[in-house]
Image (cartoon, rainbow, N blue to C red; front, side, top):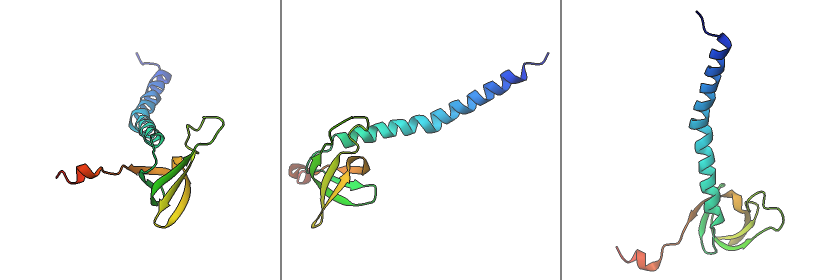
Length: 108
């Protein structure tokens, strides 16, 4: 007795989807959630690195009014890089380097 060939192919496609979900989709969504949480906790004085590699210190955060569908990722952030002030979108921040307190630097 042979099994139903349609049932076998459905099982195969389901297994392939499950592999893609657990290897690609799920880790990417958890990484995006961590990044969004990190950027939401941005404060004045933080040193940031943008996706383009620009390094600067946060001077001002201007939150946009309206729908919060983007989760605040379109808020404007003014940073100081060298002698220049640049305005970027909050969602374009790749990394935040929190300033180390002076007491921690001398404690070594």
